[in-house]
Structure formats: C-alpha cells, structure tokens
Length: 323
Image (tube, rainbow, N blue to C red; front, side, top):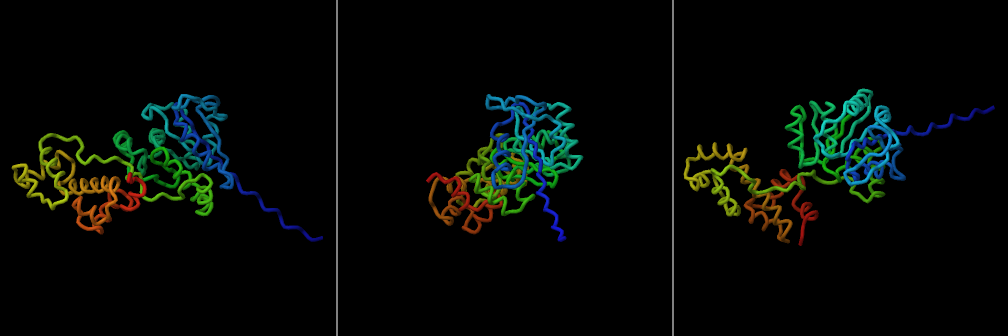
C-alpha cells in the first residue's frame, strides 16, 4: 500500500492584541484591524483588548467594545498600543505588568503615536531608540531620559519593540510589521488593498512646522531678524557680529546661549525653512529657489534640504505644493 505524504500544516496564525486604553484615539484603534486584518493579506488574528472586557470610551466621544481583557495581551504574539488621552497620565499597574509580561515571554510590542508613553512607563523603551508624534517627542525625551527619542522618523524598529510616529504613521508601522513577518510582496499587496503607499519616503521631519525665528531671548533678536531679510546674500559671523555691535567671539557665545546652536547652523536652518516656503508657494525651479534662500546651487539645495527634512525638494513639493 502506497503511503500518502503527510498533509502540510496550515500556517500558524499570528495573534495581535490591540490594547485600547481609556480615551484611545479611534482612528488608531481601528488601523491595525484595517491593515493587519486586510483580506488577502497575512495570517493575523487581530483582537481588541481593554483593561477589562467591555466598553472602552474613545477620544471621539463614543465607545468601542473590547471582547478581551489583559489576559489576551499577555498571550499575544504582537501587542499594539494606540495613542490615548491624556498621554501623560499614570497608567494602572495591571496594564504595565501586562505589557512587561508579554514582552518578557517574547511578544513584540508596538506603539502608534503617543502610545509610546505607555511603553515608556512600562520601562520597555529604556536604553532604546524610539519615536512618537513630533509634537510630543521633546516631552517623551524629557520625561524618560533613558530613551533615545528620534522625532524625525516615521517609525523605529528595535526588533522586539516598534514605535511609530503620529497618527497616520500607524499605517506605516502596520505595513512594516507585515513586511518583516511575511516579506515585501505581501506588504505591497496589502498596501494596494488599503490604498496606501507601501513605503513613504523620508520621515515625519517633513511634517514638522519650522518657525524660522522661534521665540528666543531678546538680546540678539534684532540681528536675527535682520539676517532673515538677507538670506539670499552671503552672511558671515563677522557681519552678524558687526550688526550686533559686538566682537565675533562674544557674538558667537551669546548666540549659542540664546538659540542653542551656532550662528551658521541657525542660518542654514533658516535658509532651508525659506526653501520649504518657496517650494510650497511657487513653481520656481531648483536653481532659483536655491539662489533666493541663499543655498547657492540646486545641488547644494538638495544636499541641505534632504539632510534637514528627510526628502528631496521635488518630493517635498509634490506633497505640499499649493500652486
């Protein structure tokens, strides 16, 4: 009698627990279900969890019903923590213990937006690089000094801990998880299903509003304002110091004390900011934009712009141009 080969075992379903804390952002709660649970995608079993089974109020003024409590968090293969409000509130020990226990038993823990504050409270970000919404990155770094906060990226993958930037970056996080677990082809297929970019160029630096002249101490404010009207012309520290009626050494020392950065670095950032404005509001070519903002050539513009913003000038214009 001929023996038949054993039937292939079906692929193991990866369990994903979405932990909706009180006042969670509803868009972020639904995002893992929409992306990880997309038909034709990867084999994920996505479940909604709360601190206990039952209704969970969201920041949108309505409740979602979590069929599962923290037990499902502890048993999951991946735990996703969406943003919640207020993000700086002290979370209960049961929530933090569940996150730690899940991580200790080998689960991957991911956050979207200010969900990173829950991971930080649980101690899961200590000694790691992480990100969150750019508007709260400084607060995360100040509150948890053991965390290496990168405010410019869309997500940070530390292997067993993944943190995402603000709100829509949750899509990037979920697609990245699929790419890691099942490869680029599957991730690209899911991206098409949910009508999203498989991979977005740059990070969230391009979305951070940059004020060319943020509020500072008043000492050298007049000189900085003067410099902002002359970005198209070459400016040296000696010229800035002459305008401020001080020596170069004294000027440089005072400038760093007031702004936190050397004069030429500040000037370069102001020129990139001006380039952003011109790319958004004009149809000028790269050479003219570079000349107008004082970066000289199109090559120099591309170099400094990508370094500061994370994308090329042309990519930035396609995203933000108003003309």
